[in-house]
Image (cartoon, rainbow, N blue to C red; front, side):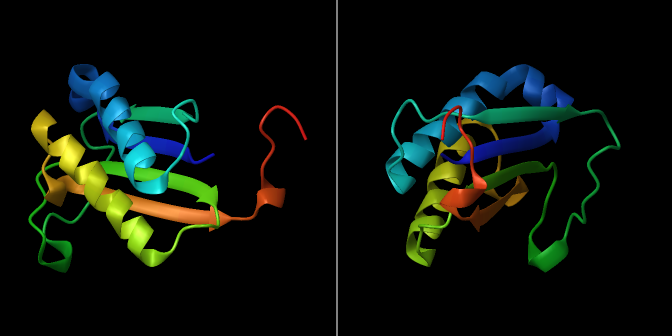
Length: 119
């Protein structure tokens, strides 16, 4: 049950939040093998000046920033995580969201760290 948090510019949210949510969810299904009904997403749109980033950090030319934070149970190897990252940016690019503008962080913890409506 990954928990997805998305931070993005308000105008990007207004134009594309449904499609972004679908893209990330579809990437999870394809790359992480989650069930289709395992969808938990929190979107936080930000006004101008609220997202601070270095436009050239790590020799990547950023124009805008879309942050995807994923919290998941520790069960994915490095190759699977990279497959997920690629699946996300591949699905966001048709929306006009450049791969260079996406930052994804996947943090893992144990099954004992989750409660999802029942024990």
